[in-house]
Image (tube, rainbow, N blue to C red):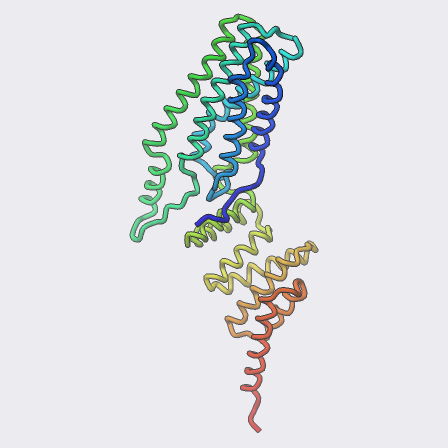
Amino acid sequence: MFQTDYDMTVSNEDLVVLILGIIALILSFSDVRSPDTLAWISFPALVLVIVGWGMSRFRRRPLPKQVQYTKSIYLSVIKTLRNYNLFSIIIQNILFLSRYIEPNTEARTILLFNCAALITLEFLELAGNITVTDTLRIFPVLEGEDEKTAKKKQFQILFGRSFWIWISITSIISIGVIFLPINSALVTKDALLISLQVVALLLGVGTFLLVYYQTMNFDGVLRADLAIKAVNYYTVIDLEEKGIELLERYLREVDSYNIGILSKLAGMYLKRHDFDTTLATTAKIIEYTTEHQTKTPHLNSRAHLLRAICFKAKENYEEAYKEVSKSLVHHPENTAARKLRRTLRRSLKATQQIKKPKQ
């Protein structure tokens, strides 16, 4: 059912994880020829990060990942600690290469625990991407079911007992594996090694919060392209009213003159035979593009075509013919508009013959 619903855009989170993973992997080559190399654990850990990124990145998603809620709650701790380990590995390798700190047993033990923690966290992240329910998953309201009961049912499915048991277990495991590198640094009583772990942890938390602020939104969809993708998902499962509500809320709360959203909404109004609202919406598109001299020929052509269909349904063939002619001015190759114009010509001729008085 969702064969075309892929989110193939590279988000900020995608770029951060990929860049950190590649940098850490390159730096890990520095000790390959060392007698006590850690390549046996660092390479598998970092390759797993990149492979895991690819699997979660390209797996089929019914909705854009930027609007997932329950999954982001589950993954927040895991992603933060994963970022911490990546930063810790990068910083320590850079300092080893610069000879600023000696690659002694204590320092290398911390690095080893960072890699081990990274492997564990990556498996937990993969499990979360597969098992945790997404926020905009649709829960149809049953006939006769009130809104309060429907919301309670949705909350229980999204945040039921199994969700909290799963998140509790994985959070305990995540924090447990992080205890090892941090405790190893504290045991050394080396101020520099302890400071490095604190800096890496702060960078991990800061990176997660920055990415979260830029790409996640829990209250609504703030980007027009994501709103349209969500609406397409509603349309596939015959819940177009939900999609109309989402677009109307976007126009109220985000951008009341987004002509892409207006065009999508006008088409949905027409589909449910709400001709007056369709005419009002398309008039808003034409007014805005004319006033701001916006070069959007396809949207203008679509707006006039929708108006022509509405006027035809109202049996106002003259206005419909004017609108479809304007549509073809913006997009002369529009096959649907050409076909409609031919139909309107026949309708106008038939109407004129009826009105013509008999000799």
